[in-house]
Structures are given as C-alpha cells and as structure tokens.
Length: 296
Image 1 (cartoon, rainbow, N blue to C red):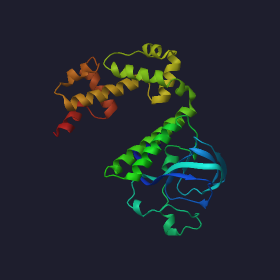
Image 2: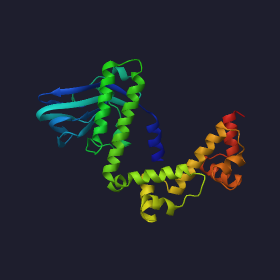
Image 3: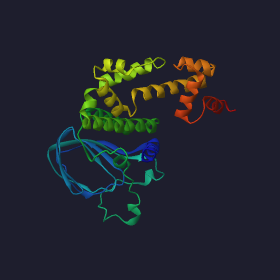
Image 4: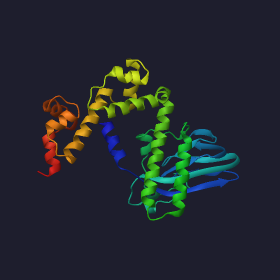
C-alpha cells in the first residue's frame, strides 16, 4: 500500500519555480533560517561551510544541496568566491503558490500563520533524496539548472510548461544519480541491461529466453536475472508480458484487428491464453477493455 501511495504522490508532481538565479558572491554567509519550499543549490565554484539542523557539512564544487521545507540551515562561511546557481520551488501545485515568500527567519521567529506555509517534504519521504547530494552525473543537473535560470529570466508565455518539464528532469536525474551511486553493479551493467530491454521490446512477439538475454549481457543467467530484477522491478519474463499487454491495448484501441489476430500478433498461441494474461495484468477482460474505449 505504501508503494501505491507513493506512486499517487508522484503522479501529482507539478513543480513551480518561485525563483531561479545565478548567485555569485565574494563571501557567503547567512544566519540560521528555515524555508517554506525547497531550494536546490549547485556549487559551481568555491567552498562552503554549512549547517543543516545539527549536522555540519563542507561543500565543494560539484556538490548539490537540497534545502528542505522547515529544516533549519545556515551558511557559516566560505573559502574563495562562491558561484551557486540555485532555485526555489514547490513540487506539487498549491493554490497559494504566489503568496509564499522566500523566508529568512528561524522556525521560532515565524508566527503561526507563516508556519502553515511549510510544505511537506515529499522529496525526502517519497524519493528519499538526502540533504547533500554527491553523484557522478552532477553536470546534468548543472546544465538543466542553467537552462531553467535562462528561461526564468525571460519568462515567455510558455515558461509555465517549460519550467515544470525541466524541474521534473532534474528530479529524475537526481534519483538516477543516487541509484547509480548506491548500486555500482547496476551502473557498471547499465548499458547491457538497456540492450536486453531493447531486445525484449523488439522481439516481444517471440519467446525470449533467459539464456539469450544473459548472452547479450555477457553475464551468467543467475547474475543477469538478479540485476534485471533490481533495476526494473520485474523479471525479464514479466517485463515482456507487460510490454505485450501494452502493445495489445494499442492494437485494440487503434486497429480493427480481432482479438484472435491481436493474440497471434503479440505472441500468444490462443485467444484464451491472451485473455487470461490480459485479465491478470489489467483486471478486466480484453472484450471489456474494448467496450470501455468504444463507449459501449
């Protein structure tokens, strides 16, 4: 149930940028405060000493900081000039988005009505993104931050759509960077795992054996199966079934093929076997699915 709850939250992600800028100062120091939203900061140049709650950190170029809602932090000092592209943003859509300021007070200094503005920490609780992020793909985040800052400075009529897409891309890159960092085995075999997925998708109507896939990956069947499940959350066979079902739905909606023809086209020996697999995956029979989309 927790997984379903998290997926529902992820589906509600609709980021809005409150501010985005390239902050460059000869010395960085800021008294303790909390913020109501999120702040994502990339250290491009310099060295920072910061405190987040009771933990002290030294930040060097390439490090990323995610300041979270309601979590006290302060900048204790810096070494050399500090270049810090960063953004303030909400992850979900809130009606009061325009009314929420960038805060510079501690929690104790905030009156009750201001404390109500503190957003829930979804990025920490759902995506498990830490405060300090050190990942190998940090330049991807930097490049997208620069695109976002550039777009924010201009704010043309399409900015609302653009800023959402870029922030979502940044969050995706953060998650993938953290996953790769936590599991070097997956990072090492990322390319060959992608190749096996492409093979499954290209040959979804045929029987794809574990032996064939492990040969493509140059891994033992056991090692390949374990890595595949860790990365995609499904066995190769389950992945193929899911892809077949998606292809079947596409054909049922956009073609005039019979269910028997669709079953054959996606690799099932009979319409019965196809119907059984479809109902197991979707919770309804293929005929019920077709009627739903045809409005019957």
